[in-house]
Amino acid sequence: MQKYIVCLFFGFFFVAHAQVQDSLELEFNEYLGYVKKFHPIAKQADLTLSIGQANLMKARGGFDPKIEADYERKEFKGSEYWDRLNATFKIPTWYGIELKGNFEQNQGDFISQTETVPDNGLYSAGISMSLARGLWINERMATLKKAKFFREQTKADRDLLVNQILFDASLAYFDWLQAYLDREVFTNFLSNAEIRFEGIKKSAEAGDKAAIDTVEAKIAVQNRALELEQANVRFRNKSLELSNFLWGNDNIPLELQPNVFPDTDLAADIDYTLEILGKPLDSFTVENHPKIKSLGFKIDGLRVDKQLKTNKLLPKIDVEYNFLTESPDVLNSFVTEEYKGGLAFQFPLFLRKERGDLRLAKLKLNDAQFELDNAQIEIRNKVLAIYNELESFETQNVLIYDIVSNYQTMLSAEERKFSFGESSLFLINSRESKLIDAVLKQNSVQNKFYSAKAKLFKSLAVNPENL
Image (cartoon, rainbow, N blue to C red; front, side):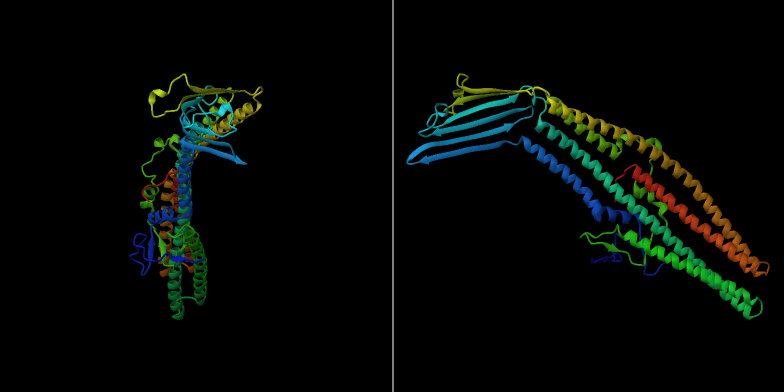
């Protein structure tokens, strides 16, 4: 598949790094903005809104006025058996009431007496309604109510989908940042080892140092080179993982070039980017969580379904009344003495189908309510745990910073003693290895700290508006 290269000079996407020639910085907020705008999953999330609107339009179609026409004619061996025309205009309304107008014209040699109407046709205007089943709720009403709840549910579901893809993209960025920082660590310490090797080599040639010290210094260079190569592989792999979230506006995947690097000062704007800045624990309300809202609208729809199934336990009593006239243009021609009416009654004796449907509706409603109760507890406890985790990482970051600083002080002191001939290369390498481990651990703690912030972002199900 054809791939565009991210290094294209998107002015809004990258900021040139002041200290690295021909390098480009991919800032966190610009990266997430690009993911939210162009990633297929983010676009797919917007489709859920369209689905909700389409369902609502479909449900409203149940109340659209309708025109119906039925025409048939039969001629055989020179005789006109019949010529029938029946046209109806219907207007469904909310409470099982239907307004309708009708025109009927029947002619022919074999028309029955019951079908006989005036030569110019017969007009009627009337109303039909359900008196028991279908009066307060019917299929049309239930479908429209459920469609409205489903539309609101799709809004909450869209926020959850967008939040999930931004969360995954954030973790990929943090891993990419850690791999970059680890690579920088080994790059710097490889440079130190090479400088130290050259100095010891010259001292050995001058007779100030033992020749075996050059071997130990060389081994240190080789170890640092090996660690740097491994770090380079990890960085390239994390760059590829990050590329999974970068797409162009034509649904074309993008690929990072080696000269693109992450924002190393991420702590300054991560809360602002994820929009979790200034959200203390006491401000969190589980009722505003998109997942809780989604489940709430789902339950509302199931309640409507339960009402419909309950209503079907009632007998079906449909009544109809129509005024009849030959002159619809004359208003007083519609009189109560000339009419057509009817009544239909239906009631199953055992109601097994209706009672079974109602029982299933109640079970589905109970199941959704249990799911809602469980989700509320899970979300509340997860948010509490993440706040505790973030508080702990604040302390861990201070501790690991002090540890790195102290290891750096010990290494500097050991190098100074070595310059006076009071220490050995073995001790320097040992101090340096400890420092490297501490710095790598610092990068790891920082990554976990950022990941905890991303978990808070996911637990709150934030859909950032500023991206």
